[in-house]
Image 1 (spheres, rainbow, N blue to C red):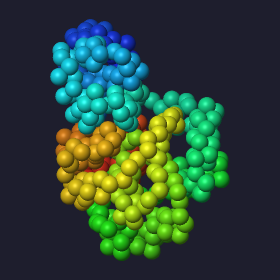
Image 2 (cartoon, rainbow, N blue to C red; image 1 turned 60 degrees about the vertical axis):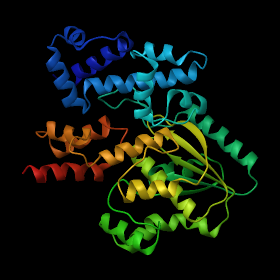
Image 3 (tube, rainbow, N blue to C red; image 1 turned 180 degrees about the vertical axis):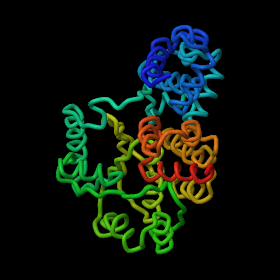
Image 4 (cartoon, rainbow, N blue to C red; image 1 turned 90 degrees about the vertical axis):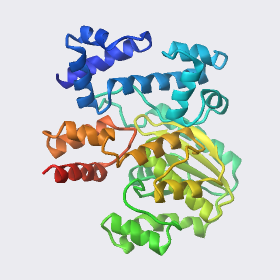
Length: 365
């Protein structure tokens, strides 16, 4: 069963998503046995049919909770295949760390989970004209509110150069956060000599190079007083663990200004804005990144999702590890291309995926 047929299967699922179809219905439509459809879907997408359908239904339900504020939650629950509001709430909270009712009231951010596409499409990962207008409007709002300089902290060098070279937030200051906090060990306090040495060792670098690449751009927070920080981080796991680290660091230095999180979906540069309040992120950083545990107490659903992905990454049953195992015959480069496409919710880069591939090859050589 090739990629085109799997994509047809995904398209059929999307067309019938809220119809409570069976796997037998899918198999009949595709001309294959239900078991074969289920196996090949899992093999080529890295996610089971059941889990994919559940995640898509919950994401669509989350959108309807906001777009239809007067529609009873029980109606939405039934519309998306749940037998009761209680069952819907349990599933929703497990996925997003918040109940449907509280999500509707707060409109807090969740991770986008769009239709799975097995091939990169023209227009992905590009800023179009409408997004530039949206960015300009946000820049004007910030400039009108704050008299002093605004600092934009951007996740990674690519986004930093994109924003700075195009002056996407006007003449504000820009710095990158060039880290991958979802990889390797860490310590506290953040950016202490021990932290720098530990992180540099994990990245197979020297403390001097780490300081130059990661810490030096952020020292501006010590040298200049900012009334407002705008944090530009994606909604994937990679970005969320980086965001958690930055927020814990801001608590560490007792930053007193306003903080806005602009959740930017890097596939199409759609933006959600959320004003953050410090006070919980140091404890969360220590629990999650240092001790690898989680109490389901993240203040944002999108951070809750990122943390769960992060802690699950070392699990042998993790979907990325399972995908590598199920597609062992592919070359490293073929695996890398597929992993980059299939798991945008993790947001990992070449080095992280290559490490996972190498770990698998080494264990099974």
